Image 1 (tube, rainbow, N blue to C red):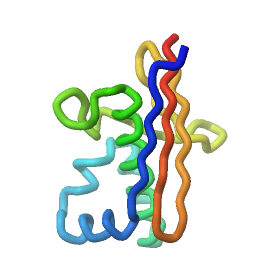
Image 2 (tube, rainbow, N blue to C red; image 1 turned 90 degrees about the vertical axis):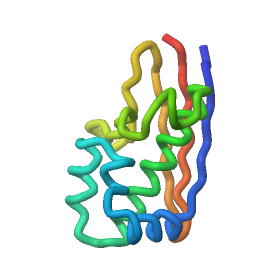
Image 3 (cartoon, rainbow, N blue to C red; image 1 turned 45 degrees about the horizontal axis):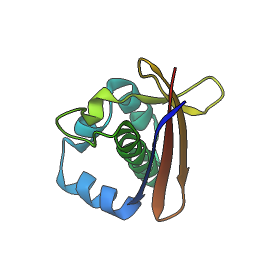
Image 4 (tube, one colour; image 1 turned 60 degrees about the vertical axis):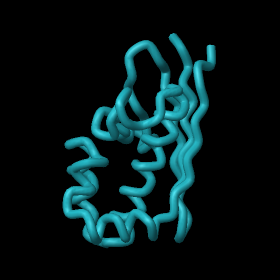
Length: 117
């Protein structure tokens, strides 16, 4: 049974500007697993695309959950990593989580569907 659907769209330039002015942004948004992946990218635009995509994914997840980000769930509590086939996924007890992330030159977008199991 579908529990919730969330979608988020973010400008990559907005994330880039935040990154340039907030030295702890990566630690505030990404889990340790995600940070390892982020730091593997040597090309700065690819890093920003990854960071924006993961932020959009977490925002979409919180919307699907119905809580939004903040008191109920923090960004670093949502671990969005790729499975063995490269598909982004989130593990969350009691739910099958379906994740899609896409990027263009200027935007990152994510859709999350929570299925109650």
